[in-house]
Image (cartoon, rainbow, N blue to C red):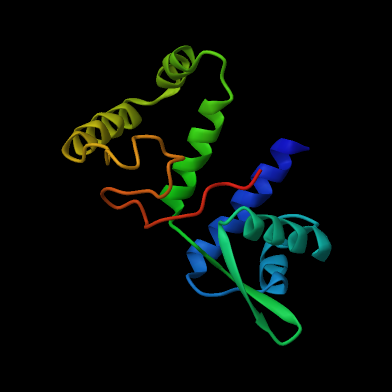
Length: 149
């Protein structure tokens, strides 16, 4: 169930980023129904959950809400990776396994990212913890609130 929820969150966020405009529950629902049978209340609940986590902002539009992303797909992906890594009892071993799963292209992208981050040392006030406040550096998609628990 947890994996399915994560997949649904990702499917919804993908649509919101792709459409690049505020969206309603009904719009997301109609698009998702082209791929799967899903209830209105399920989509509404997931959009609300994404709003509470700080990934979407919402604004009233009549009796409905319009949702739009707070940050970029890249920032969202980075936060998911960080959350997954934080669950490990042995983060170094988790990284070794993760690197072993990477394609040559992904490893090259990692090398490029490491070169870029070396150009942007951590802010000594905020520290180098991704949970220290906001994302910074090149093309992070701006800032986002910390994840809700």
